[in-house]
Length: 95
Image (cartoon, rainbow, N blue to C red; front, top):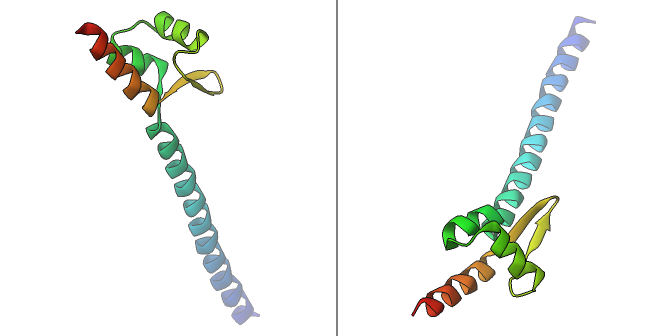
């Protein structure tokens, strides 16, 4: 009977380790996915700070479809390519 308890404890420990590794792996994948998503997009407030345009001006450009946007639940996100294009246009308009 005591031998069975030791086997059960050993198996339980091994199972716990396997489950922890699986959970850690899933959490790591989720974090990597989140980071990759947010490297491709900027929040509208960040774009406002970078460009010097107000959030309202940026929202107007989005409404007029001169600036592309994506949405993450309630957040307005600007793709990195759009931000780059906007910065080039702003530089050209200052000349």
